[in-house]
Image 1 (cartoon, rainbow, N blue to C red):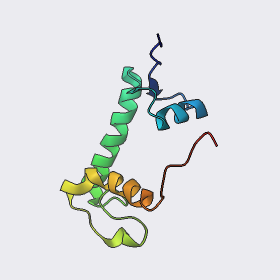
Image 2: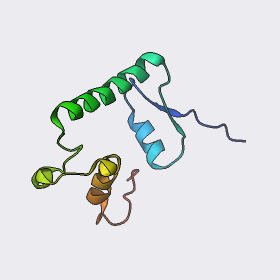
Image 3: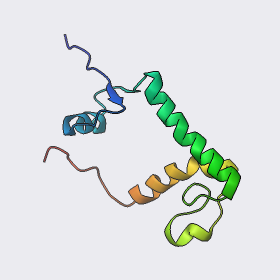
Length: 102
């Protein structure tokens, strides 16, 4: 009988290479650090972006494209999807997955 692995917690503790390998191989579940102080730090970052957006109206990489596309405005309804599109774009064309144990 195998024992279930402890979830990897995303939080203040840095990830170890063993954590990254376990995540890449989908061997462990994940969770976010759940103490109130840590969650407040995350909320504070989101509040900062909201206030900056209210003041400036434009935030590079949040409501604009990246690099040469920084002059392209991203409609507010697409802002949440922008980071996913970025890593999907950069991940295309890589071919088969590399063996992390090589």
